[in-house]
Length: 413
Image 1 (cartoon, helix red, strand yellow):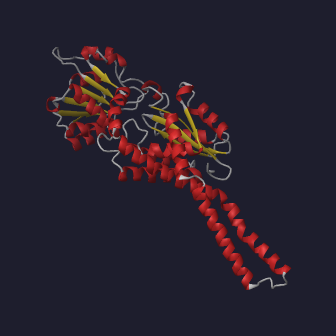
Image 2: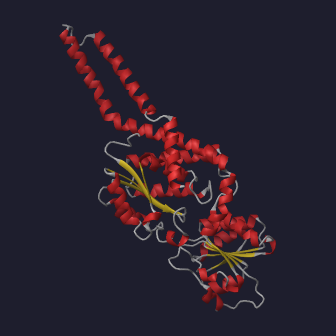
């Protein structure tokens, strides 16, 4: 398979919703505030020459370039994944790492197939890595080609049609037990991207009453004004929960915001109906003890993952079209990197051809600057360079790349 650059190996180490439950995923999450510091810390580890970190609620993956793949993978595992079972962490290198990065950026490895948020998350992760000085020539080229691939997949296939986010999938779950949205009141805790998206989906379904709460009340007020809802703060969460039938929680918190014991102390109306809790947070923001409290239902990210299986199956044909785009773009990237690896040798061809031409002319008693021999040397050099370029494109046939991609899919499931 193609080299990826002179003296550099490409590796990826990660874990995701496919290998870890929501509780363990919470052990790996890297907040936006913490990411620059960790990039600097991990970038300074032995053998890590370039580094890119993607951490979302459903995956944490480190992509790195360095001189020795096996040692690099071991270093990244020890640095970032020691808190979760070793069997839940996957290691990829070379073309498999390329396939995976392109696939993730295209939404093909997301919990909800074709989700729209991953493109923005990927772009932001690249920006942070770039500003931290962690992206070199190899990873910069990789992330740029990955974003191009993701754009093609979203533009040229219907893989993202339907439920495009975890938030919308959560609303579908809610609808299974509360089909008359006009009579419902919903509380959304967290006015970040996921919380606001969930609120938008509620309003689109004709929700009767919406309240948005956030640690920073001003942010909740801005979102509430946009969506025609009410704003609140986190001052008295149990009482706030008691006033709504559906509670969606999308926050970053090291510990659950509340549990059944805290809710039991709230002034709940005597005739209050069972509630539906939807926890979109990683790690969990709603303690599991809430399930069953006054017959309440609790849906978390693991429950949403089960729901999205049907969505994925319905889009199998579009996903296969997306796979073909991905393999094509990966082939272009690998060919380009092979050509880049050969560039130093190709740069030496001109002087070597000139030396050979001059020697040939001298052996025949011709002038050193003989025009005919110079012309012939230039033509032969052009042919050699063109053939080298063609060879980089043909190093891996489309069939071989397709087989490699299928093996990658079989490995990760």
